[in-house]
Length: 153
Image (tube, rainbow, N blue to C red):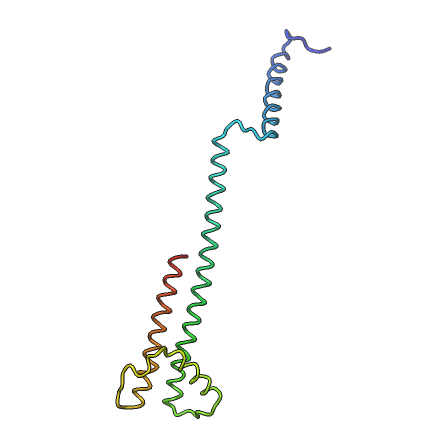
């Protein structure tokens, strides 16, 4: 026999019906895309936006780190070529050797017109100055570019 409204079980049954109705209305709103609290949605969007900003910042930092490393490696190779040419030339290396020819070829192109800037009397000093100044130049340029890329990243 169903309980009538005058029984002790009636208030509990009456309390359940409105809750079930609220839940079903909330479910229908969610299915339609309506939200009862737009602030929560707005906060959720802001939180999602900040996480995407963090992801973009992380990606930009990674790219800047890779680019800075690449610049440092290229600058280091240029300085190494110039210094190796000076060492081989001062050590009277065989000019017909393939390594010596390779280093001489690239050192001449990477000295950027610094050769003859100063004219010391001693030919050994002239060699060090002609290829040492470009080596220092490439070190400074590499250092500045790496700092700039890291700061922008």
